[in-house]
Length: 250
Image (tube, rainbow, N blue to C red; front, side, top):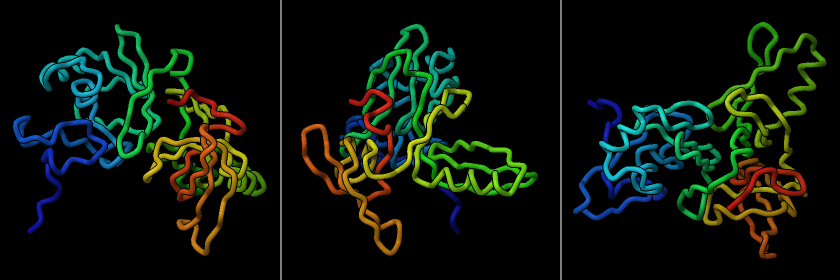
């Protein structure tokens, strides 16, 4: 009889995004992320970031002590769970050190890109779903687990919101209030960041979108900063601006 998911994960079985040694001499197991805003395949536990990437802790014990002091913020919220999953586009802040990082994909891994404090209160996140809920509200479902509600009083207003905000479009929001600052459509001419696949981390202007019978098979051509043209799945593209990126990129 199945008893549900495990509470641990072996180093050898850890996702490629984990920046850890797979050698047995470092221990058989590593930290398994808690259920949260990002899937395990595209996130890193906050304790692994403190210990293995930023080197603010030498051990898990030290990482947990730092978290217990309420010094670590992700997207403007204090994080105390050492298993909390940190994923793409999240903003990490360490109180006291006064440093900010944004999480980006890089090939098969995840990297932290240091950003200015003025940029730390904004985030670009993709729309993955939308639905009409009771009492005249429309809910946008965002990729990092957030939901944004719109109050609509008329049928015309409801149709306008649903037609304006398409799935796979992106929103520029404030942190932690979730106020919408801008809306970026996934279209030719927009500036996109590839967040999945073999070209993860590349970014540039979307030259062409090729549509297929099913949307999950749509592809896009991107012209990178090095004048290289890359073809990738449309679902791997996060729009980060119109003519240029609205955030600093690595």
